[in-house]
Each structure stands twice: as structure tokens, then as C-alpha cells.
Image (cartoon, rainbow, N blue to C red; front, side, top):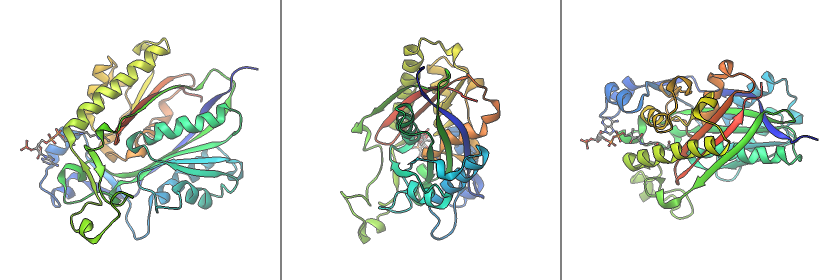
Length: 329
Ligand code: UT7
């Protein structure tokens, strides 16, 4: 019997309707459209509005569309993993809420937090269940409601992030397609450059912390920028070389959408042409775990069976890596 690989057999995405433009941000903080576009490439981002509306709301829509597109009966789904830093609540995992609302009653579920690299870490984990033969239909969701942890008085962060979700279906295949390789890394020496101080077990929320707005994301942009470009380009080059490829063999590079300049620098440092780099940052900003599946969703009709695709991300922690897969449909 030939080797079983985990293949992505469908992709879907969802972004909320509300569009937060650079113009609207100009009325909220001391910024301007020219600065935001030239420094980040972002023109607008989506925001999930409404009381009680959590990340699962977007994950549910993405998974419903995924099940419909792939003509999959929800009862066949055995595992749902949701990568997120913004779970609906602290105890019930968001993947569990998604499973309930989409009728995936036979699945077990859990969330993974690897910040902006979350989708890569979750996809790799899900692929192992499929490759081992224990699970046949696995859904990986990348979803974040970043607006719930952003300080809209901090111009260094509020212009960057947005809300959104994407999801893929993983199934076994014996064809020479699907998940091929993953290089994943974590290094907490970057913990002081991108973090939320309050709300975890080290600093549970207090009134004083809320008054100091410590429940929100803090980012020291420049060191994160430098670490992002060097580590993502290193991960991309390693995965290309250890799979005996050159950049010419790679049909698509799918980078985490944090900053247009980061994406362009990673492409340049990897000697990779921008024409084959997926990018939709101008529409959605940085949706953390949502960016990569949302890119795959937007570019789905340009992908062909057998295409060599490299996904790469860098995020808080730090966490980073690259995945090599052969597109399966
Ligand atoms: O996704 C997870 C990982 N995150 C990333 O990969 C993000 C990495 N970092 C970045 O993308 C960039 O560092 C930022 C987009 C966050 C910032 O861009 P930058 O070119 O590194 O700007 P900076 O933070 O060095 O700030 C340059 C100037 C400063 O003014 P001075 O000190 O030069 O007078 C800032 O105060 O720009 C100012 N500034 C702004 N001006 C207008 C910072 N934010 C804004 C703003 N509007 N929104």
C-alpha cells in the first residue's frame, strides 16, 4: 500500500460585513491613510460587531460553507481544531462551539494558540491524525476576532488587525499530493515584543489593569518586523531546500498577512517572485490565525492539482514556520 498523506480537499472563509476603513481610523487615532498604506499595505479590515458575538460566529460560517462546498455530511467529521488567540470564552473551546452549531456531533475538538502561526501549527497537528490512519475527515479552522483584544486608542496596533475566519477539510489520499513537510519553531525570547499583559493566570484581570488598558495587545513593531522577515525567509528556504526544490518549483507562496512590506521582504530574501505570492492584506488586515486560510480561499480558483504550495507565518511568542504541500484538487 502506498503512503497515506493528508490532503486539503476544500477551503472556505468568512469575514464579517462591517468594513473599518483607514478613513474611519483617522477619526479615532492620530493616523492617516497614506501612513497606513505605505507602512502596511492595509486599506480596510472587517470587524465583527454585536454583543455576545465571538470568534465562533465566524468559524461557524466558514465551516458551514466548507461542509456545503465539499458536500460533506457533518456527522462524518471526526476532529475539529481551531487555531485562535481570541476564543469565545476561557473554558469552552471555540472548536467545540463550532462543532455544535454545524452539526459535527461525532467530532472531538480543541483549540490551539500559536498566535499568528496558529493555522500552521493546527494544520500540522490535524495532518498527523489523518496520516496515522486514525481519522479520515478533519477540519482545521483559523479564526480570530482581533477587535476584541485591540486598544482602539493605540495607533501602533489598531490600524493593523481585523476579524476573520478560514477553514480547510483534511482527508487521506494515496495520490502524490497533500501535506509534505513542516518546519515549525517557537522561541519565547520574543515574549516582550508582542503580548497581552492581563487576563491570563499570571495577571488575572483587575479593575486597575482594565483602567491601565492592559487587557489589550501591545506590539513593539520594529523588532517584531525584523524577526518576522528573517525567520519566515529562513523557514521558506529550509523547506524548499530540504525537499530538493528550487524557488522555480514552488507555484505559490502563502505568507501570513501581517504587513505588505514584510511579505515583500520575505519574497526578496527568498529570491521568490511576487507574482506568485498570495496577498489580500489590503482588504482584511491581519486576522492572526485567519490570514492563511482566507488567502487560500480567495485564490482557490487559481490553484491547480499538483501545485507546490508553501505556507509561512510568524507571530507572537515568537512562533513561526513553513509548511510544504501539494495542492490536491
Ligand atoms: O502578525 C504578527 C507579527 N506582527 C508583525 O509581523 C508586525 C511587525 N511590525 C510591523 O509591521 C511594523 O513595525 C508596524 C506596521 C507595526 C509599524 O511600522 P514601522 O515602520 O516599524 O513604524 P514604527 O513603529 O517604527 O514607527 C515609525 C513612526 C513613529 O514615529 P517617530 O517616532 O518616527 O516620530 C511612530 O510613532 O511612525 C509613528 N506611527 C504612526 N504614525 C501614523 C506609528 N503608528 C502610526 C500610525 N499612524 N498608525
